[in-house]
Image (cartoon, rainbow over all chains, first blue to last red; front, top):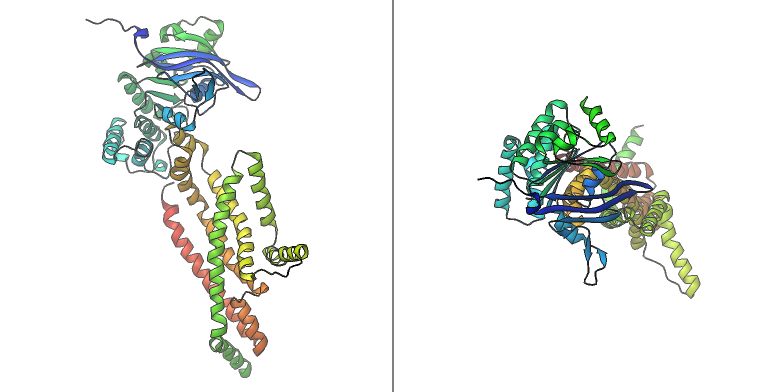
Length: 264
Length: 233
């Protein structure tokens, strides 16, 4: 007997409340509110410059929001409320602790070039989480197997293709066993023939119930893999719903225009 | 003609004859070299990190220091520190103090070298792409851990050749101490030369000695930096 999962019954892993971000005089995020539930795959779509990347970077505090709140598993990110109810800036330690719960995959991979694929993966669990070496090594082996790169474990990033580097970067983020994975245009700097292998890994993560927030221009991936699609326009949420609703039946004229321009 | 050749050859034998006067001088060169590299690197690290600080006042102090000492000839710095502070103090307090030339020389040369090391370290640190640092911070790494594990290993590779070049410059610069009465090898040769009148073989001799030492240092530096440079990218 299967009953449809009611989203409100599942934990909210990422909660965003009225997030604003301003660069100089340019407001790139104009009050974003979002709840991402455990196991959800949320895709952020939009024309370049609509604010997807700043939003994602605010979610792990690589970018400091100008105002608004972010909670990871109910824990405030970058601020704390004292007993008198005043909001104060959080310590760097508490930000670091929360970042361990948030995996990030970058457009430019950003593997550390002086470490092998294997060393890239074990670095953070070993030094940040202080886990036992044997435990971390077997985890890294498992993850490399999962992204099908065990044979490349001792290669330096410079000797790997873009697609291979990005798969190692995904394994590196997963090694921290984060509560949510953030993907910032993970296939945008890949040659077309290498995109598939990265999307394949992401698809398998989604099938295993990983909570994911993905900024991408891959509409096909968004339609097939995500549970929810959010379309940003000019720093605000333009559409929010299932892939069927947002991609195939957008409401506003602007969203219709966006999808017709990329889908023809 | 034959006479002249004999005189040159016998001139070289002067080195042996006066080794007790001159060779201890070489130890002064090495002593100054090691001290200046140690203090210079400490100053360099300090001012490089200050120059990368977000605080404008801290950055300003470092920029001023680096600008001042990088653009002043080392000899002028050396002489200034030897005489000016002592003169000023003596005038103020009607005292009669003077500073030890060796201590002043090490201090002045360290301040000069520190400015150059600071720029080398800064360039090395800046050569690490921002994305590599963000990837580290995104896993929850602290600033210090990121510096130690991600930034420095890459920065050191980048700066190693420049670093060794500066060390060689420091060694060459140690001969300046002879000008403020520190008895290094050049000082010893000056002394012996004016005593014996055999300038040609003596100065050719130390030119060869310094060339040989610097050549050796450069070769060792290359050997040391190669394994670092070959690893990765």
